[in-house]
Length: 403
Image (cartoon, rainbow, N blue to C red):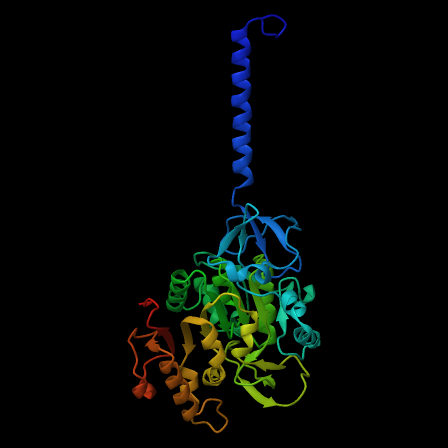
């Protein structure tokens, strides 16, 4: 064998065999590389489909992205009816099934929804939606104090000074978490149903919404207080939660109307609605209310976990939730109880005794049972006025117990 050439038939056969083995190995490696399920499409907040490579993190997968043109319409419109699991293989790639419809998809779905979105941009429409692509003026948020939590997973949350928020912000500064018992139960609920969307009615500065998103759950956070909302929006940005989270600045009640929020100098979560009227939105404490049924427009997944802390308006929110409960499976409903009951006999109360009893009976008729978060006991609605509970958990029969 001279000058690199074969001088015998045996040598040539060996050369050919080695070449074929090498080509086969290269083909095998390339085939497996191209079929690796590491490419995911996100739809939570983008108008264009994006091709991204997953990066492990407690929250969303934020990665360098490039334009993807294989699909000309959102996957949810093209294939969601055929997708039984949270993801599916299309064109040899793993495509993630979105759980929330994006504002872009809402606005382009049909003429009626396009009109709604045009109204929405004036801050007087049905759904005033913020996505991470729609930011506040940076001057409003640059001075906020945002700290890491001590939860697992940890996340950044923008807080108030201690003297301005003696409950949630104070607890986060001191302990790195808020309400450890409820934190554990909500995390357990999210673990029991990983495909469920977390709906946070009365999100405050967003502690539970951010916790759920850090656990890689889809989230809709609804918060009416302007200052709280600014804190929440900045926290979302600081955590780079770029998809599968929608923020709505609305109050939740039993009708669509203009409302004005009160103020509380010590507790930024203890702020009730102080006025409902047919007036236009005129200042930062005024906004529009929506119903639970209105939110069906935004949901793609059929399972939800709800946290409801809306300062005595819980029974009113449940009054217009018939379609909501009919179309989605509510796995757990965490609901504040104390304020609603404490204020029921006031002349200006939102939840009268009659309204509260109606709400309780309707939940039981839907197959839910109430449990005290404090005593962990199953509760009897016949003795509801003597319940020892600040918060209760409604759970259907087929959801695992959280205690």
